[in-house]
Image (cartoon, rainbow, N blue to C red; front, top):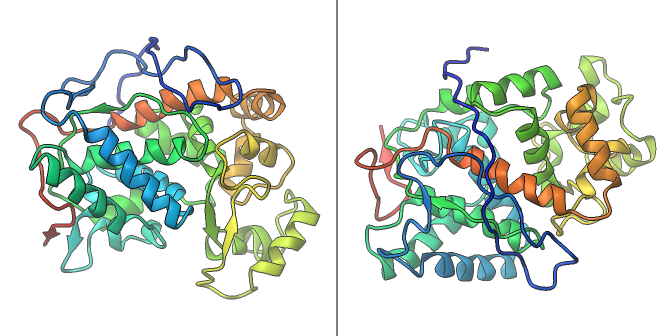
Length: 344
């Protein structure tokens, strides 16, 4: 695997205020939300003068979207990962390739949802503030609100990103860790992007909400572990039996959806870490967190925690770290009227 990106500097954490869902069971009253010194051109409140209503507009659209289909919230959270980990947070995932060589066409983009919803939100924002707010910022705000609308934190989001003009299938195939990744691979993927083990274990907690298709895990976990035609021995046997009822053996493109956290798939909570600790997580990449002393210790601490406060604090920081990856700001990039422009 060829990693081409230079390591980014690791910054020292600093504190900032965050707003939280009223009525959430005893979250933090003051949390560390924004790490380090901001990237030049990014700021919380970037649109305060040019489009002061933008965050309200995004939240209103997200409420409508998840009211129709709750699974679109987690899907739009995943969408930000696919945007930011490939060429940085520049909305390049939205670009279409006439030759089928864009990020949308890459293997890791299979089953990715949210394209139409991003356009829906963008249209509302454009009506209020023409050619002002980037698609990249809308993706970041929508991901935050997907977390919030699942009873998670509504952390501050830096804005000021501009949209990229390049989208390459090769980049997505190269830069997105597959669900079969082991801990060494996962840490390498993240370190190449300038993120550390804590970003890895915290952002993996996103799997506490949403669903995955059987095709993304069934072969590795249920039917052909390590290419030996066996079940993954680390997978809880009772849970495996349940998964086998949902996922058909030998069906390569099985789109059957399975909850990633079987207990509370709609709630952004600590369930994911309890799943990993009890060997009831879906992906090999989830279970891999138990194979490193630092990530394992974090999983164990979160699984035993009485409150999600620490996780919520850490999640705000990790999402901010990811949201700063290779951003285009200032005169770089562009602000598109619609997000899904054609390239090549």
